[in-house]
Length: 188
Image (tube, rainbow, N blue to C red; front, side, top):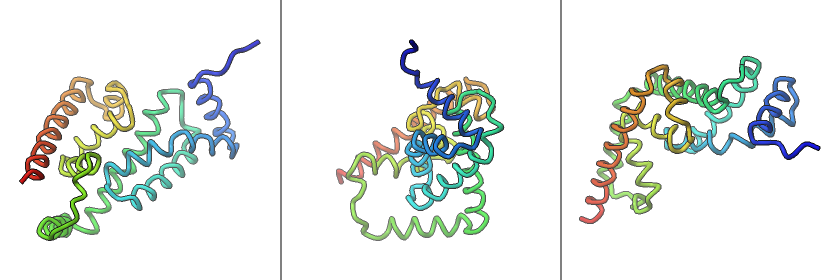
């Protein structure tokens, strides 16, 4: 008599079903990864609609490319696709809107008297993450929100693990500085 399946065995079974184009397996895969991937996109974009659109694109790509999955870390595989989609989104956004428009909108928001949404820790974190360099924000989001290991991050980024560790450390230090500044500004 065989015991209950491990998480890895369940995932491998779902992936095998997806490769055979079984709809119930793809639905299960979406259930397993949708919230983490949505969170990843939302943390990076700061916009629920954008995160939803990117999530839909991600699962379309996963459906199309599941046959190319060869048994490496599935987390790494799916988040590599997600990272590429987000990079494409940023390139397209910059191409069509220009960075200047975005900076003007941010300045208008900063100059107006907005509701103090930064009172909440998660909102402060989102605000500070948006002020980081995009690469550092992405690494921190992948590491802590999507729970990817440093080894998976390094492989995803195609760089030595020491470089990845250094970037995450630098990003966390910068994020800490930004959070401290927000706290100081709030006390004024």
